[in-house]
Length: 341
Image (tube, rainbow, N blue to C red; front, side, top):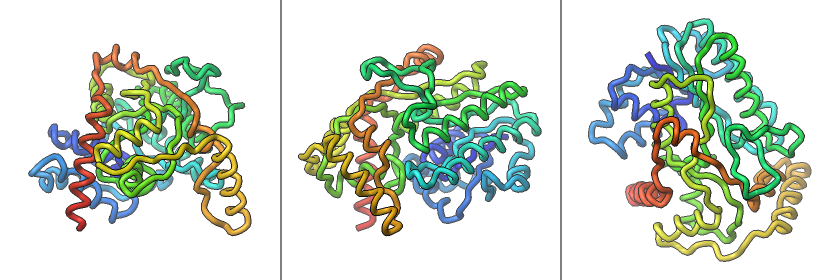
């Protein structure tokens, strides 16, 4: 039996759909029952038999730091996809990020060891990779992480989580790690996922930024994960990026498909530097949640390009073009919007 942690997230929902569609026996964890509806909704995009497919999942309520419940979830499990994580770039959320991303992953690794799980797949992030001083030099799996860099709190904890997985490989667990770029997928139009970008662009964004980062389709991510788990590949990490694209180009592409006006003004670095300082002051004086951290402001205009050749060569894998991903996701966004009206 397969266990999927974080089954109600963007990656988890798409992964569960693929697994049950292929007849796999699956158990998945969730934290809040109301989030199960989002998974069922994602299923409805892709199959007329979505209710029957959704009912095949054996759901278990379990927090990453609730060992007794996790231990129950691990009974009879042979393969684990660890997708659960806390995504936040707010500096004051650091301890919460550590608790979920690092300690939670350590718990999953320890349970994989104690239950003699055959293989573990961990969903990390390109945020956990190192960087080059030359922005045009491609980042690959061997690019060294520098703890002295001004890394975001999210990046620090995802890197720490990877160390827990590598520790598990030294204790007998076969594992693979995937480092996706910005994951593009439908059904999660609010919160911290990429769907929120589609919604904001539709509603109208005033500013664009020129930073470059990697993007990848959600189904490409889960397709690679499944292929890696079914292969003999073990104890390796893989960057999952279809294309390196500027934020501006992404915003314009989405706006074009949604037939709305793209942002016209550039948020230059000096403006972002003022914005994150005002955001910090707002937090300190009035207790407002951080909306723009220093590291986020910096990355908005930073050029980071990623090399996807390792996974392409290992699996002979072809990524879906980002233009196609955008068109498919926009179509589902507009469909949901019409149904809401």
